[in-house]
Image (cartoon, rainbow, N blue to C red; front, side, top):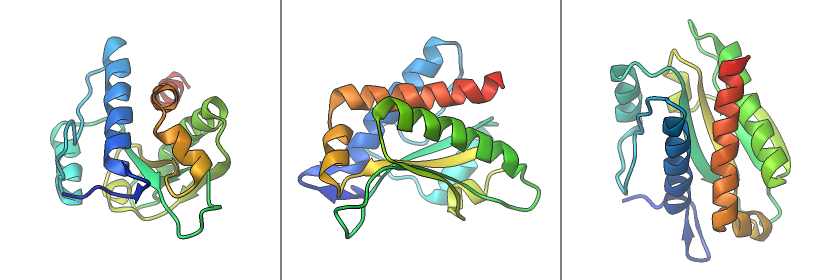
Length: 169
């Protein structure tokens, strides 16, 4: 229904589904119970994603995305968290920082930083919640990584590492 960002025949939905499913496999292989709002080509609403997470008593929420810009020079990884009433946003920021740092280091991405923004799925959670922008599909260098299976594995491992680092500290 919604391919997300598109460039040169590549779609955000295909990239993030691959990465997300790999993250799930890695977490489950180490004993985690993982629920995903998407495991196939479906499009739950933002409200349904939040409700699903709350109904499953989620402990952390990671929303994986691919960025796009009108300028082809925009590139890099950035991770967002929200500051909301009653939320322990410091935990969101820690989770965002661990994941962002792992992606930047392991995938050799430009670090666009950890930023605060009011995305629906992060601002409506009371658990650590982040939105990860892996890279820009509109940038040739980032796009090469986003569609390369070796880098898909690196992105997934990096998100996994960031989650594990969060729980360890």
